[in-house]
Amino acid sequence: MSDGYEYERVLLKLSGEALAGDQGYGIDPKVVDDLAEQIAQIVKDGIQLAIVVGGGNIFRGLSGSAEGMDRAQADYIGMLATVMNALALQDAFERHGIFSRVQSAINMQEVSEPYIRRRALRHLEKGRVVILAAGTGNPYFTTDTTAALRACELDVDCLMKATKVDGVYDADPKQDPEAKRFDKITYLEVLNRGLNVMDATATSLCMDNDIPMIVFDLTKTGNIRRALQGEDIGTVVFAEQG
Image (cartoon, rainbow, N blue to C red; front, top):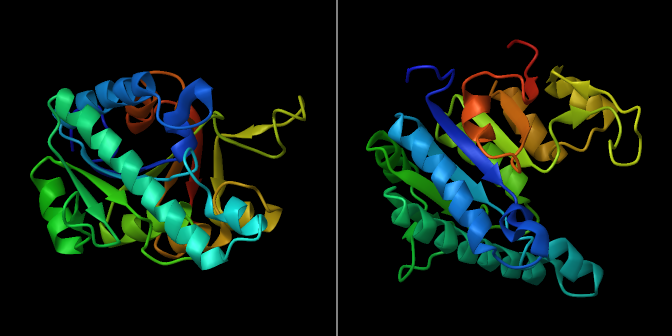
């Protein structure tokens, strides 16, 4: 275990919106650069890191299908958006001296490797960041479900869900000033209360495979490292047996 860290191999789930910053659309180079700087520090400290990135800053499949587009086709467009984000992250990482590989669930050999579990594990063991793009390669599955699935496959110690809120609340903190933040909560309670943390498929996958999740605020610089070192900066979601 790396000094000062509570987890050694982690999967970070980044929403596409996180890469857009305040502009709300597209990729903000300053946000990506700041993210790469934070990640460079933890990788140099010996943390094995995989990243699942969404594509909502470019295109959301659900929004497309709501406007009358075929749902499967809209989801495939969303998967391609995640590949753009993955390539932007890879570029920023390499400028910060981080070795990384983009693995896509949709075959795009000119810009990425195919997702192969054993190869991804080998990259992690060698200290390379593995950026997982194109979701699961299947429509109707969210990138949250992808993150939960890859976290199980890659046998990570912790799934980190980066958001714009500092944890899980019993109500929407933007609408309810009395909303209470949980320091810890079980996956079962998240499902029973209908809390909007991840979709039910992703939540059940993590619960069944006993993978803890940290929900934290990405907008504060340094929070990735602080969360991994066990500081109380978000909510830890865990399985009952955990």
